[in-house]
Length: 250
Image 1: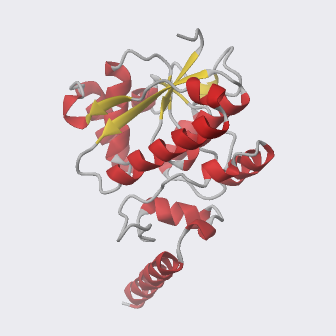
Image 2: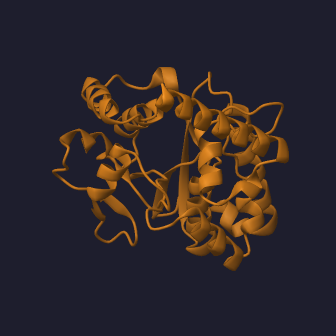
């Protein structure tokens, strides 16, 4: 077993796959992936399939890098330990701006797993952020001796951000465009293109309606959406605009 192991929450998505490639492809260090199984998640099979295909391509092209990827450790949502402190912290943060329930789950996983400094792919943003995203970034600082990896302050403000204290944030300095450019330079952009992002796929393709699909467009990566998905996206945006206009008039 390699000495230095990066413990990474890997979903088969863009940000976490970028970090996986950064560690095994460029730095030639080991990664221990973790995946939380939510049986009700419509994209579950798509994410698992993406991870399988990505590992297969890495193995075919760079066997040494593939050997650095440890077998994924799976956690079932129903097996997460109860942690009332984290749950209350999440509920209070969620009152200020919507925070996906997955962050409460992942915080409980981080506390309950054997991994320390579990890495979470929270990327740099080009566009507006919610209250909790802004506050979290304001309360992060470089983790000593861990390169460009960040950690939470010991006494964050608000204090409920302590739900993130078990995590490390390795891609905070990168936007999706930065990651795409890096992948081109490292000649692994074809692998990054295999990642999955949509939460509610329709007939095997991204829906164009969910939050990750919206983020893809906002991050100037609309080319990742098929034509029909782009149509759905723009129809939804138009509907929201017209609804807002009517409410303003009334």
